[in-house]
Length: 385
Image 1 (cartoon, helix red, strand yellow):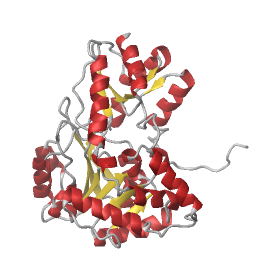
Image 2: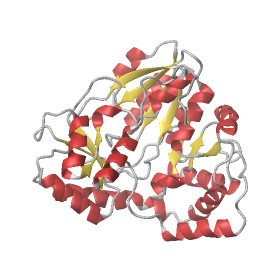
Image 3: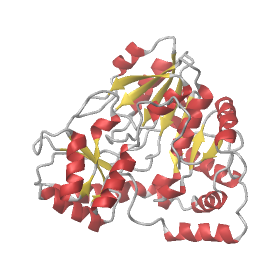
């Protein structure tokens, strides 16, 4: 292929290949135990796979409706009302998306104008800021301070002004594993009341909350739900991240604009997968049992690394555990993560990449959505460091 003769000005000049791609590629090249990117190393439920096969064989192979199969949207509405007491109209207020990241991008593209300001809490999942930048809006960061990583609502109040158009919430939070409390929702309600500030609530880990606590979805709060795009993912819930199907809940007025954009950047999402999810959602235990399933994996992993030189506070949610290495090395976390992958054959994600500024708390993020054998192998390596 010849070198391009066209000069292209980048819309994302600060962005390179994501750290998740980099570390997973490095893990594969080095034959390392991969606890970096957030995906399970075990398969989806066998019955769910059977349902996909059945959908393929029964002719569910052409375009799905733009908003998604109605049967799936109806199941999502039923589930949301049972869990959070919120009634969403499956016809007008629920849209199926090609994963949660697409839903996030579509919500931002549909609702923001140039020079609007969007509040993001850092460390933050890496897709938020680039999406805001592409829209022409401005990201305004409020830091979450270690080790609690709780939102300081007084700091939020200080950065709100006439240009503030959206606040992005992520609970359960990636990478820290913190969760919003009922008091947090009350604070957010108070801050946004009487304003035109929208909320984007990324809740893809909603079924992974531990130690008897519950997920405080924004859908639980009527005042917040009325101004919110709430986004979730089937991939995280059903160990099927490669299928890339998620969904967005929003009031009809917001969803109308969301769909205007959705129909042109995706239009329709994988139909047989949607049909299978619609049929599988009737098995409530499959998602209600996920909290205990992943808490057992968290506890197993942490018990095995006790006595190592890595420090930790047990994560409260998600399937990620942050480990402190300040007693192991003074290296930058990016350098240390690469060295561990190459020399010790274990891959993780450095926490500094989730910040918008130069912050290095000497912590790495490890994914424990793995078979016990994988976790045991990882623990053995960590003990050797």
